[in-house]
Image (tube, rainbow, N blue to C red; front, side, top):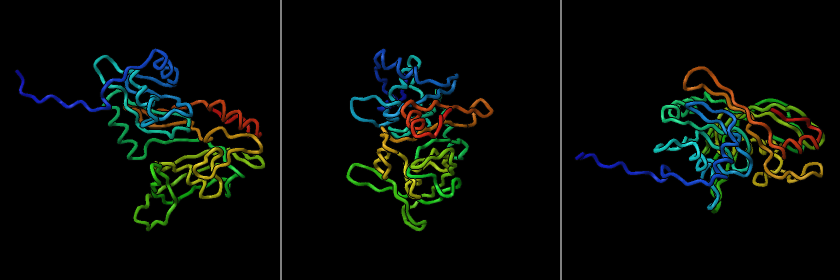
Length: 256
């Protein structure tokens, strides 16, 4: 008889029973898959983790990919609930560790698209290098710009490029060089170009008379070193609601 103490099972390791519809749904989101990784195209309105009670998150839906007796794949990063786009998960602990270190070393590069108002940024391309701090208001968490010497200041830097513009709006390509919560949303709001549909940070709920149905922010691509070697790039198609608003405004087809 072994004298080894049984390992305590953590709550996040307890399998979640999914319906056939839920399993089919998350499998329909797969845009890349190999022995070590899964790439998903997260739709808007779906929480990555810690969502509302009674509604499964992406993290929980990943149990659809668990092998018998094994844990589910692990999310490498998160997206806000109303942000769409690429999410990466690791099938194995070594892959998760490898990508976690790559994330810390800033070797994982993210590219986003956003519809901003009321015009293109000035200048039309550049970088926003403004520290952020977290603020709790009731049960809600916000990020605020702050002075570099603020005791809670966290360095934050975002590169941007205007892709297209029309009177009242612009389509902007974004590359965060740091990964602070709500970074893109707060940085754009700080230069007077909030993301359309972003009620939390002052984004317009209608653009040129057309409703912005949600936060118009899309994680379009992810480039990263693959655990097996080389570099991989995964792209997620732009959701229909964002594509439609861009077309209605005359901003063209966002792609990819």
